[in-house]
Amino acid sequence: MPGSSLWLLPPKSHPLNDTLVTLIEQTSSRFGSLNRFIPHITITSEISPSLYAKSPQKWLDSLQLPEGNHVKVKFERLASEDVYVRKLYIKCTKTKELEELAGICRQQVEGQDEEKAITWATDTYNPHLSLLYHDCPPVDANALAATAESVEKAGLKLAGEGDFAGWVGGRIILVPTDKSIEEWAPIAEKTF
Image (cartoon, rainbow, N blue to C red; front, side):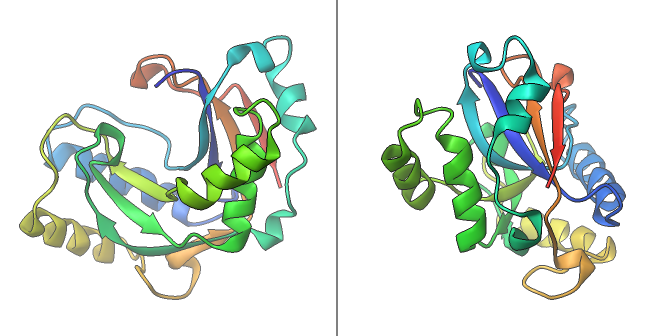
């Protein structure tokens, strides 16, 4: 994945943090994937390192993000695509607030072109929380059902309500995703 990415994570104190790490580990093991990664929703990617080279934290802090209590993540359902980083994921509702956050962050990729960023956020942005990165065919219905059981046992609520159906606000982290997955680590973090 060229450049860096901005990821949305639950608030530090949210009970989903540990649950999602465990779920990613279990899912990766079940499918024979060695990839482990921080549970996140990608807000945007392809951010040129030249934008933040001098100070990643200062650059991230300079982003005018909406108030965190307005950004809600709501889980919908499990899905699978023939895309390495979307092999098995939890689809999230594309709320107006999440779309706005994606548009604001995407402006960094589009050279501050607000119109391009809004179009991308509206037409292309697909909020999701990956459970599996793997070089395999899309996950079939039986494997989706087995994963749904694991998700339910972990306490997550797909298309439900409550603490385990998503979160409000959280943290944005900047991750150089142009490196190999095992090297993906945040270089800046902002709570909002």
